[in-house]
Image 1 (cartoon, rainbow, N blue to C red):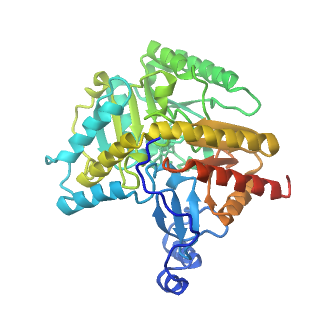
Image 2 (image 1 turned 180 degrees about the horizontal axis):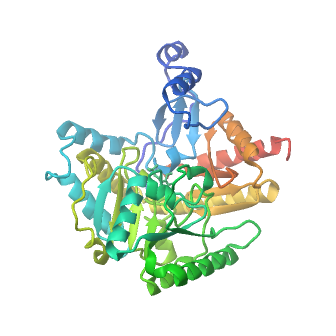
Image 3 (image 1 turned 90 degrees about the vertical axis):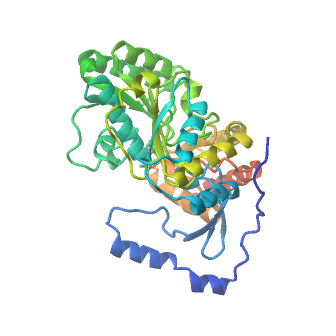
Length: 443
Ligand code: PMP
């Protein structure tokens, strides 16, 4: 494996004195109080005793007291190249010093270079790209393009899918807790999730395909596109069987319904390939992505095959989309991923993580299933084990590991570390998880 990043020392605390820290940083309680006063009451945070994170260094985070954590959530699958990756920061700083913003109505170089570099890694003949600022915006744009291309209005989406916070993207989101608008679009047909409790994924995906077939037969002439995550991240790492997308693609083609693949979580080497959909043997009509392309700098985009892309021919512009700084970050990310073979790294280390979690599943009854691909893995607990998941997160934090949670019932432990993580980090996390699960009162 090609190591292109700097190894950080596992020293527990960094060098700032405790007194300096207490003087210069807010306490977690102060931040919580300010949030309560100045944010809407809708924002939440992980942990009963949340750390105040002040520094990131590749796969490690540090809190305001200097305590070091190994990060297994990567800011929700954003920091694939690691926190404050020096090579990416250099590219961003250089661009910031040269030219920060003009808007897409002027000619600048980084945006077109990035679009060209993306075309080289995007699946099949997907070539045209529209840049925006987030995953929500990318999906909103993709849904719009599908309507413009087909002249049809409706959509098919999956229960367990998450696609964003705007009106249309929330309307196609299939997780009840994220569907907060009381007046969502009516023209969305939901199919069951391709993972169901008590069913094999082959059986569950057949149920979903049958439902989609019925929806298409009844409403195919009103439906523009189906939108799907190749692995449902927020829904709980729900992973379809390997033949699912080929079967799905055939159904959609028959009814002239486009396939939009949302790779906001799964994109950019996360699952062992540039995009997860490559491992399922289909080329979608439109693909959306965000998060890891900027490695922490806001960026989003949707890209389409030439046949579909040509329908996006009425004026549209995003003020900050394609700005030189985000584009420079994106170019540096692609470069770094190629040089460090992060796809290969995710595959190999993903196997280490998967095997370790499978071993823990055999030992701890609490773990009912392990699923995912590459360095996107989930350990599924019972549907009513949401409170236990919170205890595990808290205990793992005390042991120096930040892990995530997701799932329809917030019952899935999520492991999506920066792809620059070391095998040793994974093994240490697995030991800590074993200890944590063994110490639970229910174990
Ligand atoms: N799609 C998926 C699969 C996501 O996981 C998310 C957010 N976690 C989004 C879309 C929305 O992205 P953003 O928060 O950047 O708007």
